[in-house]
Length: 276
Ligand code: IPD
Ligand code: CA
Ligand code: CA
View 1 (cartoon, helix red, strand yellow):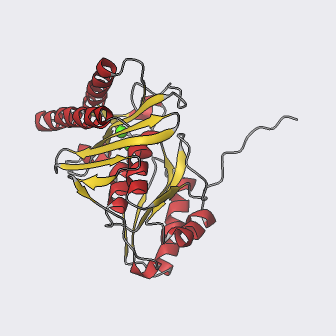
View 2 (view 1 turned 120 degrees about the vertical axis):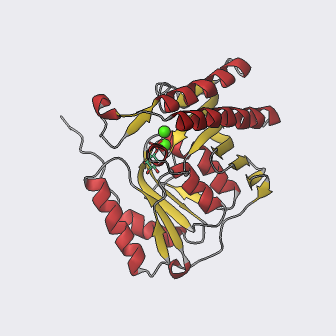
């Protein structure tokens, strides 16, 4: 994997981060996505849109034949593309909207479905997380690795809630209850999935789960965790695909124990109409 790719991803993430910080200083207007079938707490702003444009412009100017999958204006992309960039221009929109510093730009680069490079940039804290396939995971240029806890009663667990307050929320709450029954040290819900994955990679969280994430939430972070020695699967233990999916990330040692919890409470797949 060429260094050019990683450098371009870092450059794009930092330019996008400048956009996010500028909008925040000016005072940004958040709109809810309810008109698009979303909820009033599913937010978007000009900052999300411009951040994505800046990233796409840089990729298109340097790699004209590469495809881009992005949360806002780039959702209709073939995920099997030979060269695919997967972009969340603002992960943690709700934190951003409320003036919290915990948000990030996330950029993953995939070749024929395999993660090759990942960059996650939190511009308000100056935290840069990078990973290269086979080349390790780094936080602000320092190598990192996952924790070595192998018991739930030694662990700090992260979780996330999708923008759904029905079945998925009930399943998440039941799984959290089981974690507490296993005497974990605590549960954290920080609100930015890409950064949650980085915290597992850095050994600050021992595991993290969420019952519905999109590829742009985990594309870069999945590689970061893998390169830091961790494991990432669906909440049922299957390999991750680049589609909306449940996600379980751990330091590897805790995976079976966490899996028994996330599997037990996993939301059922939506019912299909079978007309045979
Ligand atoms: C969201 C965040 C949040 C997670 C949601 C995501 P957004 O992304 O990563 O932590 O719980 O499922 O959709 O909307 O802020 O880009
Ligand atoms: Ca996101
Ligand atoms: Ca987003």
